[in-house]
Length: 131
Image (cartoon, rainbow, N blue to C red; front, side):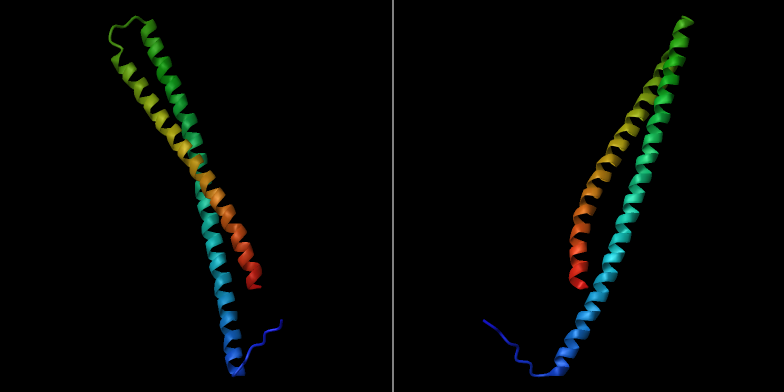
């Protein structure tokens, strides 16, 4: 069964065509801006991930050094090793904080990556529709 449009004004069709062209252009631009923001976010998260990996390694070395200092002090049979024990404890806390930040960066990198993938599939569909 065929349906036909009852066009009353050729001008109205021209106006519709112009509005659709503007919409397509603005939509394509918005998609590009969104993609740029996603990429910036992914790059920033990757930088954070690398930073916290390096911090974990650096802080693990601090813990190893504090343990070595304490062991050396204990081997010398000194009586008050509180300073070395506190230094070791602080180094362990700092390492745990860095490990927590690394886990957080990994979690957000995964979450943003998954959301970006879903968005990109939908954005591609919209791009095809707009073209």
